[in-house]
Image 1: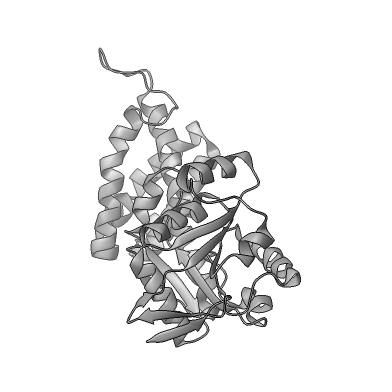
Image 2: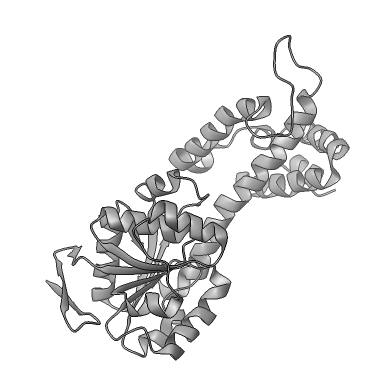
Length: 313
């Protein structure tokens, strides 16, 4: 049985992998913080306070955590046994330094941040004051919609802690909300985060670029009774691309590099040259993006010299 000394002098217990019910404070009521707050409350923890500054955050807190008072950050910290810092990466160091200076985060408080790029080193000012530091990053994109909460139960969480007790607590919290905890070394957090950003952020860019080109190809060719090809999401171009893109993603996750198809894999240099010319007419920057991605694809696929020549002209 694991024990942790909490701010009120009591002892919190972890029976096996189940932590005691915790008083949770959240800074702040953004997309990530409120989604995690709902998930933790469903696991029978109690979100006792949260901070919210913008109108959007206030409204989000009222909708997702209606019984939770909105308080200044020092008051949120003082009320917490588990203090969850869910702020953008760039804001985290200043927030932690400020909290340490106030002295409101009491000894024994579990302090967890949700930053992907940071480990527990950034929490040093609070760790030195007797807090238990955790880095718990949900490997998921958040839009602010209700499905964010559902997706938490499908997500892995990159966890970093100072010792085995910390890892046990982090693992317990993640398992309770239905996620899968994955250990990430302190010195590997930046690489871990870069990999996730490369997958999630750049997929958005690639798909958005592909939709732009597809709309240009389809516009003005609509069949009788078919909706017009327009720039708004959810139209004909999205319906054409969605099954292909989903299949490509699933095939890659299941088969790796063997999932690759298309002109680079076939060594069809003429087709690639034609693609570049067509994209150049739509948008030169789009053509350059295609060239860069195709070159990386060709390197991974060990493509023919003809393909490499077309892509490096």
